[in-house]
Image (cartoon, rainbow, N blue to C red; front, top):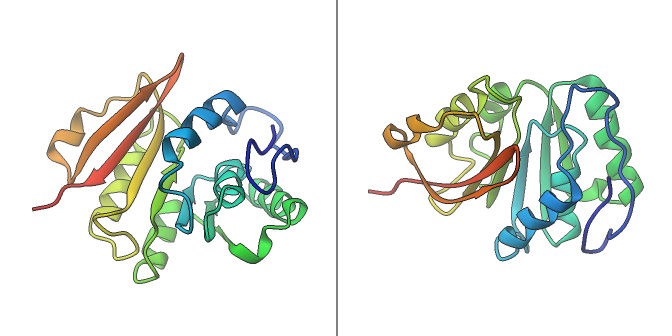
Length: 185
């Protein structure tokens, strides 16, 4: 795995060994960031369920002002910190080793994030819980873009009755990216 573009282009990134995380492939990451390119410059980027930190690091490399990485696993946090040190992006980053739901509560009231990316374990409903907390949170605004990476088998029918609207869906072979906004009155 590597950084695709920007100031850290082609730098290799460490990943967690084993099957506990599913690193986003370079091809999917490139497609994702082509779709995000107008949102990234100077934004605050929130990477929930961050794994190795590759998505947030890609955002920083492409011009995000700062990124916050949230990951519960001690091993994953160690890899995120190593990757940030190697890419020299530590000074624009915050790493929170904690449960995502607790992190969302702790970030409430901070400067708003422009993009929130989440790649939770598939088929567990964690994206619904996280989005439920973010719906009324003050660390996001009506302009915040929410991106959820999910299995194609995940059921998102609940979105119709949520505070979000899906304005774009990109489907891949086994997973998908949903691009969401908060509903406005």
